[in-house]
Image (cartoon, rainbow, N blue to C red; front, side):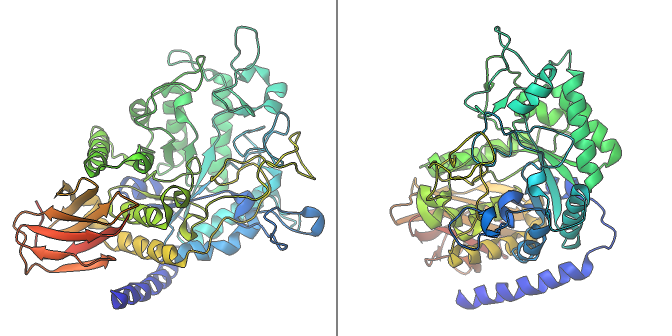
Length: 515
């Protein structure tokens, strides 16, 4: 196994070199094609922290000591790192200006947009003579040179500052006050209208956002809480953007399990109507994995998602939403093995891989200064507001990242495997495999005589043993292990698999098409 690991690491270097050599000088967007074929390996970044320079290592950017928060230009220095890890698409969290009134955190939430047609000055380097637009364009162009697509986050709500400037954009309650959606106290709900009467004012604000993003050279949009807008709103906007760029990608933050609006006054559009409106994909419900104990439940989740995606004439896809910036770090939930399970599931299931900055090195997103009084603030909030165990989107803080080299190795190897076996994973048939132990799950992806076999243990506290039943399987079938901590044994009609707590085993079977 050690030699196999070294071989794949060597191949990674060759692939990265080839990737640069084949990059086109003139960028041609192919994001929709990539996403709908489950080929995207997406890395979510907060530009405000991605390239941050925390020289005194206290976790906070101290501007009075000459430290620098993340911006478009210093982010460029990390793009080679992402390419070497196998990333081919970046989800950039909102680049719009943030509200400073009734704010959360000392920098304000990235999702509390105070404008939709300008760039957040917090992301602009003051050491450059380039304009904000030119700096954003340069970052995107440099990503493209490394064969990395860029999709930009579209906030679902407006800040209180924006409400004070343009109250006509916002939904009001019976007392005439702007509606606070759920417990998002730093934003107010935009009035997007209904299916029969879309609010043209809000639509035009979003249209301006799409124009701005397209003009920067970005490849798509991730729509924050897309369920908050009518399907017709999205259908018109997506069609508008596709007239400018047919490959412009649209991903909806939506899930099968989200069935209620965030406010009694809010519109709610379910995921299936969003897909029908033109979205290329959605989040799905893979974040439920952390709550599952039975392998059959996980297999049912996969099959349900696959079935949901098969109902459309146009190709649709889903991200492997096992972890997002809204989810607690998997390290805190079930340790490193949970993170390793996530990378191998992302690599082997018919999903687009999805990760948050810092995940790949095991960041637990625990900030020692969290929710304490801040000596300096740039909003009307005087505390370092954060969500425990989640990526900081409220303050000028350090680059995300941990020190787990073992997880990083699995991350790189799994991304390589996904790229090497993309034809099999995208075109293959998903075959659930029966396990004798209820904590275990197993499946195969089968295509043209080749099978990718995955076995996992959802018990993160105990080692288990399980038989995985495979028809026509024989002792002399050749299993090529990609990752396995334990030794599985081929037997007639089954594979005997001892599994450590939370372990995932991945094999390639070239001489049997699993059924």
